[in-house]
Length: 171
Image 1 (cartoon, rainbow, N blue to C red):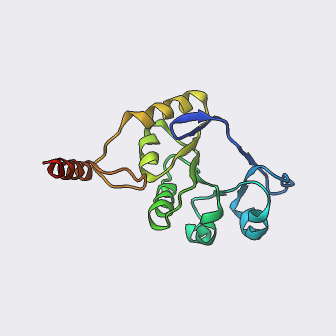
Image 2 (tube, rainbow, N blue to C red; image 1 turned 90 degrees about the vertical axis):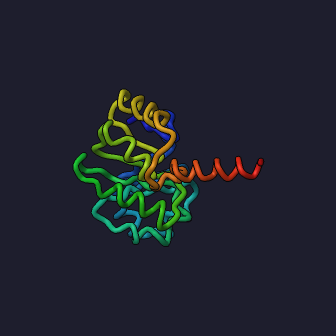
């Protein structure tokens, strides 16, 4: 599966590890929420980065004690009509200040790419190469938005205010 991160198609450094599979001794791994919650401290002490695949049916509050040590969180879209992962992404970015990789995975449609970016996702596991390429274009298409959201960009009104302030400071 192609991975798009920060607007580019990249090699995924994370290995998806099944619940019944042995963990590699080092390297970046993505594990299920169930496996992670069995013994999070042991996983986080291993050499290499740890990420978790978090279903949209679980409360992200369960992740809060570990956010500073998780390199990636993959939020699952089980169907394109189920948008709970958007809410999870916004909570992680805005309420809890998570600044690691926030990855969208599952049933993702091209029409949703902009919304994912605005919710705070910075990576996407695409099913097809053509979707990955479309997502890279989406990340460059829009540079200014009116609505505040979890991606950290200044809104159009804030940018105008900043511009006026800097212009008046020069006068």
